[in-house]
Length: 271
Image (tube, rainbow, N blue to C red; front, side):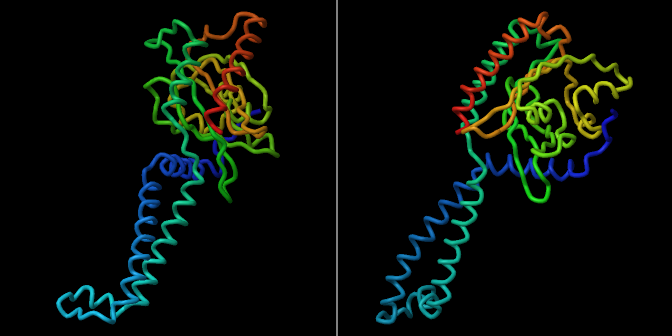
């Protein structure tokens, strides 16, 4: 079956995923929490000052006199600032802030284990951690959290997922999420300027997702990550080397088991 050229929510999901990654890694949340603490401290000081301000001659201190004349407004502004900072800090805190350095090292180890001696000059190797994200009314998608190596670090790929509609799970990552099982998939490389229909069908890609690919890999190994018994995301290993696929069923099963074991260890960093 030919995949559709466009996913109706792909562009919006892509933009929402960029915002989620920015919030998760941005120090803004620490600034907001600091501002909330500062405003709370100022509120306590203001309470003491405004209570006794009437007993002082503030003619020599215009600013303090201005504040004393507007007690209710100043106090309200401090309380409002504290509340807004706390609420925004709580909202941004919902974007999980993992130790990306530890995750990156773990992904590097997985890449070295599954692609030993890879000729990175000819055939790039990647291990990408995708997290399930959701936002009403955009639905759910898988957004890249971290990737092994130092190349292809822009992490712009997203794939749509659904817990109820199979056709809305796109890409190898989305297919792995839907089945909940480890997938091992080899596909023929796409010639430059050639027909990519077969490649898109075998890798479950829409036309728009295919156009956004920075690397058109020939071999994929993906497994679903569960945290506390729930689907958290997907780990995808891929390379452009067509000879990276296991040569036998026994080797394939071993690769699957090794990846599943590594994923269980990786999941401990995501709790």
